Image (tube, rainbow, N blue to C red; front, side, top):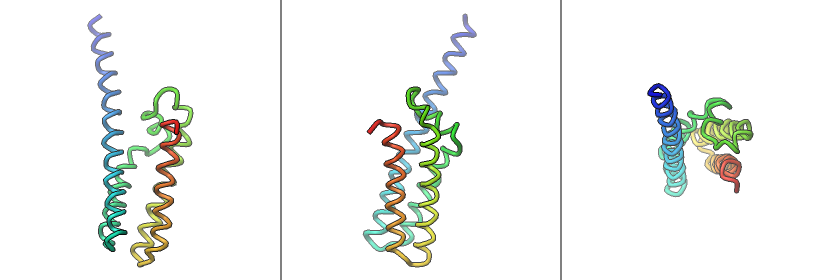
Length: 130
């Protein structure tokens, strides 16, 4: 009986850890988005690039379909492939935006930023049922 309780406690702790990780990652992504937005508003390329790095780092928790599924509620796990594709698209838009910022093409960088927001919204629409 004791082994069962220890096993259940460990399982619950792992579930809480996954929940904490997603909350931390989402906060870090939000913070990165704010930094990017401020960079555009105040003509600060370094802020844009720093925000891109924050978002990219936070998005790394979704490194494959299985990791994306681990953060989804049971009834949404069937959408893990779509959620993972959203995170891959997010990375592509972030890389594109970074390239445009480095070459000084801020209008194109802001277009790529729209893709970043679209990727986030797409995943949230799936996971939150919007």
